[in-house]
Image (cartoon, rainbow, N blue to C red; front, side):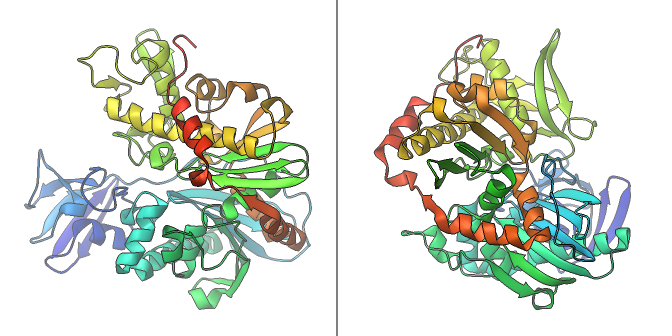
Length: 490
């Protein structure tokens, strides 16, 4: 079969066998199309337009790619999700080991990938780039990926991430004339690191939640067919507290006081230093803040609404990349819910005040539905309750916290006032809250440039006590207490 594909200004002709899945064909050929529901057809976000030919399930000229079988020649138009505001942070290397050549730091998120090309002698970073993780077709969250691996897709998911990494490394080499890359340093949550190596993830998904490895891992680049001399995976703390939060702790200087680092993403990982001890936990926030189960949700990439404010004639939205709004990312969702609460569109329970209203229009085709508000409530309650209980476990009061660092791609865009107004962050920590961006990537850059920092990462991971919130009744109490959405006119 022949599929002619239009994407933006580009045109390509693809070939596939009759009976193949349309989404699989497109993704295999490098098109960045998300399917956060794991290809079950529930989310509808892999929708493509049919320009010529016929496909079963076509409605108003569109089909859901993950549910479409190619049975004849087609001409389609796709909207790719590319680019991203996933790499910004204020970290600095602060010295190197003086190696010659270049290396790359990689932060593997469940939804996104962030890369940094680094001059190993100077510590300068000629390029930082972010992309959507192509593994999204296998599910929006960690559990979905684990289930998919158990269904026989482990090797496919490894090939997917390695191919995407290979493409970026080759692009860096060609564009910046780096010569052979010395090292690729990698962080990510524990499951993502396992998938990167093709390691068994079955133990992560069931009690007592054991990972195949947590230690620092070194591989030759050739063993993974990557154009780099060495690959180094940073250490993790537990099955659900990964190397990303370890790297973030290094970047934030977590040991320098009573400090709490919260990476708000699919897993809501947290790292606390108090009284000379380290504590970590992870909350099941779900993919809400990364757009996966939000009607018009998407990652923090071009076309996503990242901020919403009140205007004279309705909501005023800013869009990543400056073009038309195609969806909304986590920071925009927080702003939108805060605005809806201030305007009295929704009450403290999250219900629309007008019983006949089911959605709140933002910009263009983008809106917030009553189900979106509910998903937001569940996610924000998990984060706020996790912070509360982690502090309790360390015997720490809110007023004793020196810094609350908010990290991650969402953290870079987060409006702290709105986050507190809707109950995502405790108001008691308002005076010490600092948004620090992608500390996972910055911490990985530190480990890439300085062997001492990699040793510090191993020490931090080893010394951290994991707090399992699922066995603590006080977590569920705090979770229920934090379900309400602020106060009207907050």
